[in-house]
Image 1: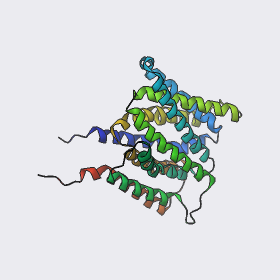
Image 2: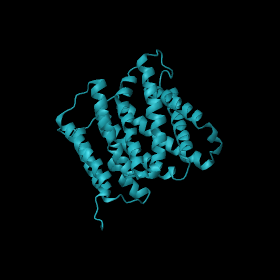
Image 3: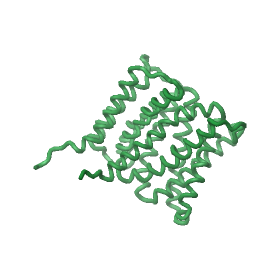
Image 4: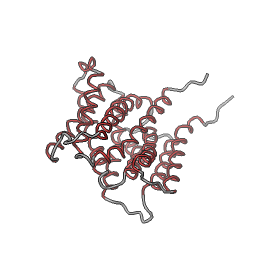
Length: 294
């Protein structure tokens, strides 16, 4: 009977994460039209933090100084990634922000080689290059011009790459559930602090059905589920493969942006998406295609 390895199960779970993350671009873009950016992030992540604390409450006594430090570092990097990305949504379409966030696929193997001394496998390198080409086709216009929102998103992509690399490092050293609790709680504290000092209000003046639905989707599925899966599954795969799997996030972003926000897609976007799928395929299937002695 065919049996999937832990690495491929981890990869499939990470792919499920990209579906939820992909849906959040247009959801968040519309939500921050109703309330301040960091106030939205604050409430979203506090809901997630409380749920995580309740879920793993018996384990909290096992948090030590090193885990607290590493989880806090992850939380700071995560905050920077979300801050740049969410502000970028004010200036650029959700589809474009989703695509450019996918640039982390090219930053991750480069930073991983320097920071972790991990040289990506050849199939991962080929997959990263193909995915990068796909992102370029999907993101830049004919004149290769780039807006403020797109610059902010590229900075976000760098922090996403760093977060992937650090998660790979720390998830192998600590309890991944506790690591997630500290990471998300740190994110909540930072979002609240920025909101209190820079925005007119933290709590929504009017609770609409859309806002409530947005908080449920982004807190429960795109945060609690997504980060527990990421921090756990990354122990069984590589940073470069994780980045390539996460490149599917902008594809799902484009789909949901069209379905929810009616953001139209061009033929060039579809071509870029197809090349990104090819990059993912090469990364996943390449290691299985090898000469064997029978």
